[in-house]
Image (cartoon, rainbow, N blue to C red; front, top):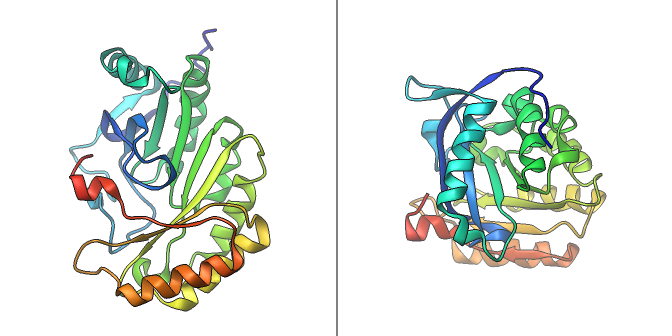
Length: 245
């Protein structure tokens, strides 16, 4: 079924490419990545810091132009999806800054048989309400004040409530831990998850650069989390180890 294009809206992008998911629950999953330009946060550990701003290198593309790129990439890499449903990962930057664009493109990708994987910093909950019904997987970050210069606990709580309200999708939470991460930040994270959906998977991701946390802190954070949540995993970001996009 071909949906009529209601709005020929554009959004800024840095990349549209094929690779394998490098972190959390779906590590190793073949995906087509759509990397938006622009973010509403500026975290110290960001591994795509060039995406924080919309520079002259960003390409402004329409919905139909992005779909055309996706279809070409899928055709070229079709064998990689032989044993799994083809998946589109919206990442950035922050995809939810461009919710009007997402509202146009996601339904069209769904009718073409693609699963939708939304990677987000978990702060723009009002925008999430507009597309949550189309999302198959929501990979939500919890951003800590120690690295992101501001507290987002209220935003994360509202975001998680909305993300888990659609029972047919998969939701998990990621937390990057650095040498500056505190037990109080972990406690607040656990408190929020436990109050909304304690079976939501939590992925604790230690930074691998010069800001990596002490091993004793990783143990402390993991053991505390396991006391209160059903599903906690300590896992590094594999794409950083193997240096892939």
